[in-house]
Amino acid sequence: MYTEKVLEHFRNPRNVGRIEDADGVGKVGNPVCGDVMVMYLKIRDDRIEDAKFETFGCGAAIATSSMATELIKGKTVEEALRVTNRAVAEALGGLPPHKMHCSVLAEEAIRAAIEDYQAKRQRK
Amino acid sequence: MEKARSVIARSIGARDEEIVFTSGGTESNNLAIRGVAQALRKKGNHLVTSSIEHHAVLNVFRALEKEGFVVTYLPVDREGLVHPEDLRKALRPETILVSIMHANNETGVIEPIEELSRVVREHGAVFHTDAVQTVGKIPIQVDALGVDLLSASAHKFYGPKGVGFLYVRKGTRLAPQILGGHHERSRRAGTENVPGIVGMAKALEIAQDEMGEEAGRVGTLRDWLEEELQARVPDIVIVSRGAPRLYNTSLVLVEYVEGESLLLNLDFEGICVSSGSACTSSSLEPSHVLLACGYPHALAHGSIRFSLGKWTTKEEISRVVAVFPGIVEKLRAISPFGKVR
Image (cartoon, rainbow over all chains, first blue to last red; front, side, top):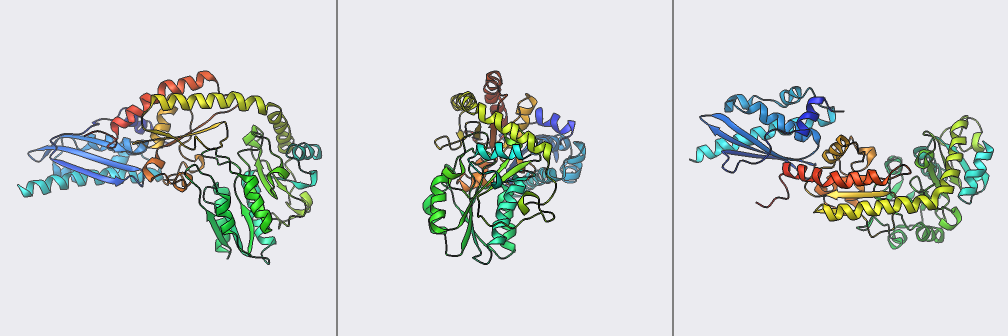
């Protein structure tokens, strides 16, 4: 059902954990649906220096979280906002149709974390 | 084929002519429920079932609702048991059929069929039980159970796939669902699957012979698995541990993690389990059985079912016990839940 790449990211997820002094935190999903993703970003000079995640969910949810953090690390905020769910799924060699919503969740987590960062910055 | 019919009939205390061969449990359930509903439609349009049935039962009732029948879905308690009192209250003058499973496929909980059928008999409705999980595993006598119809599937007792039977008590009116010739006393048209039927009878014979011994051996392994998991992994729930249960099933809920990710990790270790209900593993809904038992969604998503069988060894269970705590710990480390902040 899953590609080698999905299984590999699921077995050895990158960037697991939380960032205590994160500049942006995005929490998306709902335990009722069986998926919750929390993304933590460390941003300096508009560039994503570090990204970490915590996920409650299926294999695809964990693999897409891992891949999403990999894709946005080092990117500018603007570049990161252009990372789509399709890009995450493609980087994993594809997802089964009924698991595509996991990649949507990953995209939403990136957006939510960046929006949190931007909102915090405006308040300063 | 008639010899096979006799073997099967005898094993459940039925008469030969009360056994209808089908393609399996799903067809047996469809034939029983639709068959009775259609045959007795003039008598009434109310049907009763439980909220924890297999989809091969639930979806038949849902389809009948669209055809104008009224269906009551009985609740279950935390252990997953249907209460005879709830059934009594649900019955109406126009109730024609009640269908309640013998044992649940996810939890293994055995419903009090004798008590439930007594309530139905007093009322005069027809009683069907989906016994796919129990035939060949525990002794079944249709008169003692008090059922009018009983569904079974061969592969559940190590017989071939694609064959099963429906017990139909003499005098029970049933509209055939597959139309054609007069096979199976006009209750199920179509040339019978003779090799499947012969294989099913042989498998049932073997299952009957080994039943006592298997129940003891597998039950001991299952209980040991549950004791070890409970002792080694914090924050888990063993579902319906206190209820009458089939000896081969163990449904475990693991807090803070999701079932499929547990399943995949166990699979990497060569251990095959089911997440929630095996038949719905491609759906995103958590188990309707666990929700009916009152478990919250998040916990219902974290379910893992261990099904032990004839070929399960003590070594295999030791392996599960050895690797399971580490797998749970690894997934909990990834999860945002259940941590002290």
